[in-house]
Length: 357
Image (spheres, rainbow, N blue to C red):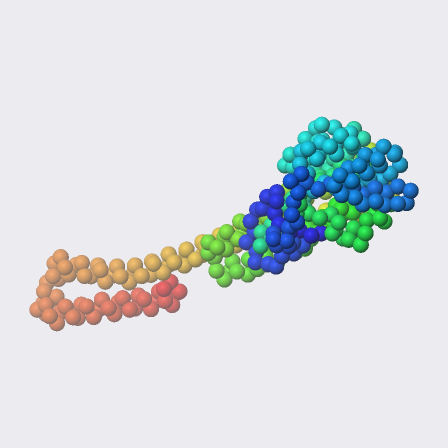
């Protein structure tokens, strides 16, 4: 799957890494003001792939024929284009509203004979992780996909070499093909997060600074984002692989079961990484506390040395200590000074030996 640039939200992740499954924003396709509609219809063994007004005409003809299998792909569709397509497909107004708002959570719901499914594509761009909403509406003879300009379903792994074979297996298999590529793209991202955790575990022992703490918090936010997306998707695939009323044939349910297994493994790895990130944060806090204790020990050692000298100096400053032990000030002063320095040196040597200074 080609992931290029954020469009629906972009939580930061301070991970210095090369772009994976993504391209720079400058490579994004130019968007049409009204959006782009492409229709692929399969009838009598013939597959037609049209775009624009011809696609809408073909969609109306294919739906009316009651024999064609249709894939309707909406890219950055405006409200007017979405209303036109929904009228041909006879979609429920609430379903059309959900497709237009594009701020849904990952979910699956059944609206009459149709299944509305919301999944999210994840990607990296410039070291940042972002998510994009992908909407699918599955009917008995059609699949409707709605997404932003930053996702190209035709470049996904199963459709890259052609769409004819996938279309011949029905809209349910097409839905699985698009979702399967989206889920597979999660794993390289998770591997990079795991590498980042390993790097932070090494660095947190060597140094504990503010930049490291910020990286830890950004990493935890990224893990929470992925968990918030993949946990509902796991339940969605469980429903699609086990319930007949979802419009998925028995043969196709096996494919969704495979996707469900992938999501189970993904969420298990996420839980492991979240625990490792929390443990790394605790190690960071322990390192900071140990450093603080070391600093306090050194300050205490310095205080012991300096306070001894200050105490002797204070006594002599107040009482002159009987003219420096009756040696008439001069020799007595230097003897007392030498004694203070000697005692301070001995105290410093003892404190150094016990690693306090």
